[in-house]
Length: 295
Image (cartoon, rainbow, N blue to C red):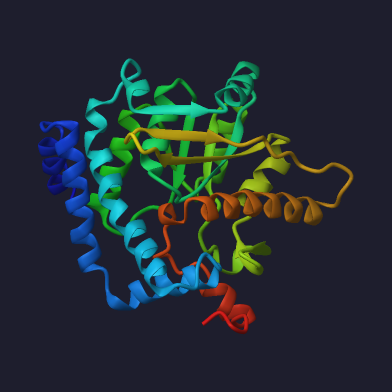
């Protein structure tokens, strides 16, 4: 797998940006064709459940666009070899950059509420190339070749990479002033807490909130989307801080609720850019029962 992906990277680095975008779309179409019908049905059910739309054609369109863009994400990563600090501004702009600059100047670090909205691979690469000390935290992939490829290519654009099990190293990097990206939009299983999302209590990761409490550092929701001109825009939301004068449980709950509120608002704005194929309510339904009327 690793060498196959390197070959694809070699090919896509030798074509024009226009050809690369076209290739990404074709790759996305192929991926959509390979997605099992059961997973496609789940994607549409998720869109209905989130009350994005009740129109079947619109839901199908959102579902397909959200999946096809994975091809663009893949091709973007293949072309990381072409990105550097001198040319990144040609591809990505940052709205709210001053919020990150302020934290960097204080050398205090922060927790980035990462998510699967837009092209998250370009987001991490761009933030690093713009000069921010990024620590990308993720799961170890079951396919060793794919895992090696992800770690190598994320590292080549300046990101530090850590598995989510490396809590001690994550904490250490935060203390060193790193901007630590932790996913906040996936099903965490029984380790999460119930927090409002799309009108219902949903099991939600608490990692960002717990780290914020441990370090007294802010959580910053960061999103990315593609503009009509084909360029990417990273949007930095206002920092979220731990509420003082509360119990630890209350602090975790309040901060997690705020993160979900930001996430939901963004997804409703750009529904075709979120990863609807993920079984977001799997453990919520398994442990607490499915909300009436969600099917």
